[in-house]
Length: 161
Image 1: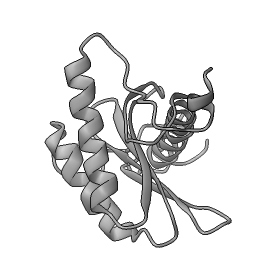
Image 2: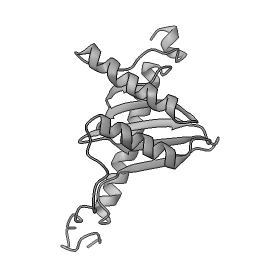
Image 3: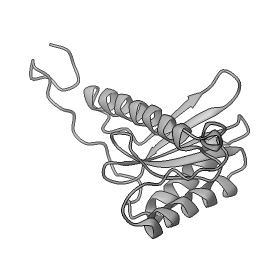
Image 4: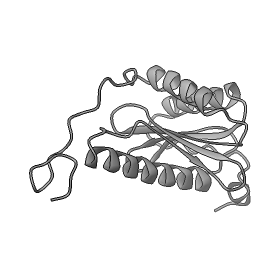
């Protein structure tokens, strides 16, 4: 890994076959970070944590780490929601010890947005901006009522048998 990458000096994280698509995704993420006070970085990721785009100033290593953490939180939220009959995870916000926040939002089928911000990043403003970006990327609007709960081994939804 190069020195610039280790220091987070703005190496773009988008990978793939079509550089123009990745640049467009990166620009959308730059807009998100620029639009919302307190946001520092953002990534677009697959449900399994692969980076498909990143905001300016985020090293590849940091983009991969943020995507991996975000995918894990999204999986945990989705698993808990399904287990207890509340549907799939849509948004997760984690308050960090030093006053920062991690935001993760579903952005379509098998895609998530993640952003890291300071304590000044208003969760309502961040959620709205992430929803707008998700729609720009082709995701449907906020889902309707939650999906029916998955049956448990005992046959009773949402309860241990």
